[in-house]
Amino acid sequence: MILYILLSGVPPFYAETEKQIFQAVLKGHVDFKSNPWPRISSNAKDLIMKCLVPAPKRSTAADLLSHPWFGEADDKPLEVRLSTNARRCLRQYATGREWCKS
Image 1 (cartoon, rainbow, N blue to C red):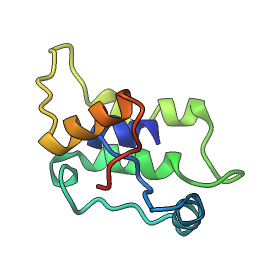
Image 2 (tube, rainbow, N blue to C red; image 1 turned 30 degrees about the vertical axis):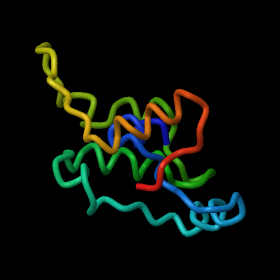
Image 3 (cartoon, rainbow, N blue to C red; image 1 turned 180 degrees about the horizontal axis):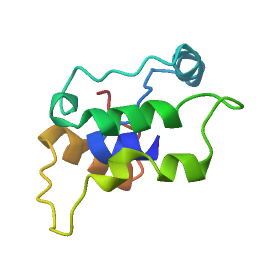
Image 4 (cartoon, one colour; image 1 turned 180 degrees about the vertical axis):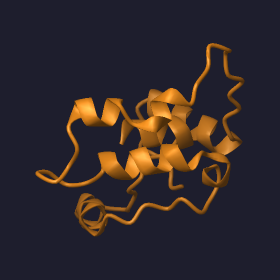
């Protein structure tokens, strides 16, 4: 979930109530169609999906760390531009307010 949040600025599962959030988690549907996901690599999306697999089928941390996505980066610093919505949601979270809807 943390990787999803770092890349998009919002949590992968959102609902109005805690019960609805748990239901969304159980369904396991992750939206990779809305912004910023069209610009995110397929390797990043694959890694996120592997991280969200329920135990005991989930990959080990060692397996996940050997995922090709970690090899995509080079030594050059990246220019990261967060969407306005992602910045707003991260600011809300940092000030202790609830997460934004994506």
